[in-house]
Length: 76
Length: 76
Image (tube, rainbow over all chains, first blue to last red; front, side):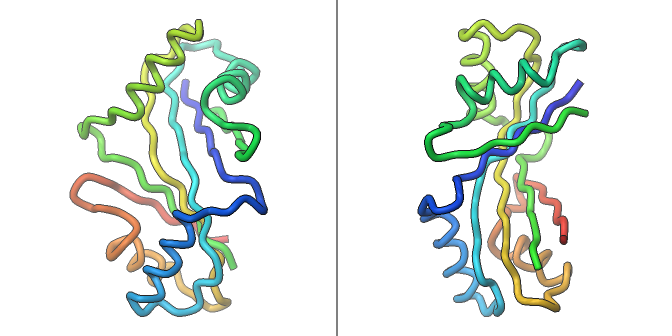
């Protein structure tokens, strides 16, 4: 089974990578880009029977820095 | 309007970050993690009327390195 975890900086936390992308898009002539936030996506290939609770624990312990990052888990 | 772009390394391209996460999860006692791939997610806040074709162009020109990365665009 597969799980996909999204890790994004929390709202209000400065995102220099996202800002850099926004500026670069402007320089390339793309108009109307009001904001960019960049995060991580982690795709896990898991043994059958792994629960969403276990993936959440992985996020809490390793995948996300919960002080500044939020995460969401999708199982499939 | 919002767009979300996922950028992942293509299948077959070595993903050292993903491998590091896999090892770290094993060290923390999580069993049954067969594989991990790490990619980027970019959330764009766009002016109304921006088309998916324009976002695809952003991916081709800046957001993804299409030699080694694949991308997908979701508009919302």
